[in-house]
Length: 244
Image 1 (tube, rainbow, N blue to C red):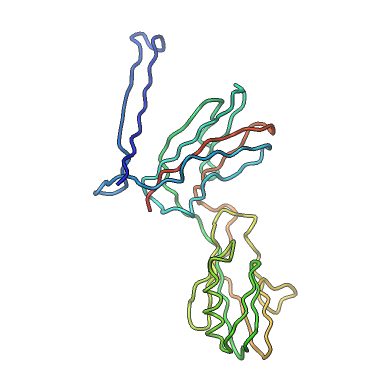
Image 2 (cartoon, rainbow, N blue to C red):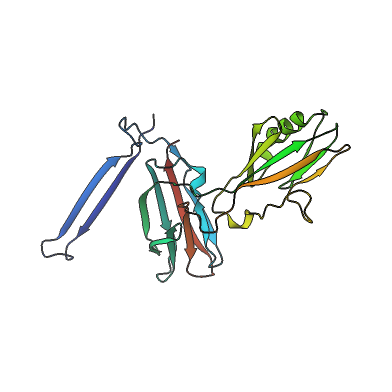
């Protein structure tokens, strides 16, 4: 099992009257009583930016909540005035100026994920289709149950949603991210002028939508968000040590 050690050394001859020396070292452990070694990582990576637009370095939804995750960030800039503003959700932690780094714990708490059900009914025929989130599912078997199975089987293909079987005739779609506002949709029932899910059937098959959870613009997912201070090229080095 992997062993990861973290050390911090602070020293100064003139910050205080007697000088300052602080050294501490620990092996990173998982949460809970067992406290086994923290053994998963995203690896060291870098992201370069050329705008002052905020972006998300780590989405909380992608990791298990309330574990002993650790985040590493470093501003690689050599320009003294350049900084990254670091926030957890909408709460600003502070700024990382040129050469500064941060290492801190992160709970990865989920926010509220949008969801809706898709109920298939009446007569479905071989070759009938359901189109949603850029994915087209065509059934090879003339039953609603088969179409539900076919939609769920394509779960990895949907970029913004995860379909699961709620019953023989019902698919539950849950948003992958709770804070990805660009992909939060106003879900509209089939039969409306514009339907979120488009179905094409040879018979009288229906695909009815019912919203389970509306999107929340101010979701509480504590994503790690980064805002560059300038529109010229800046690079943030980052890594996450996490547990499953």
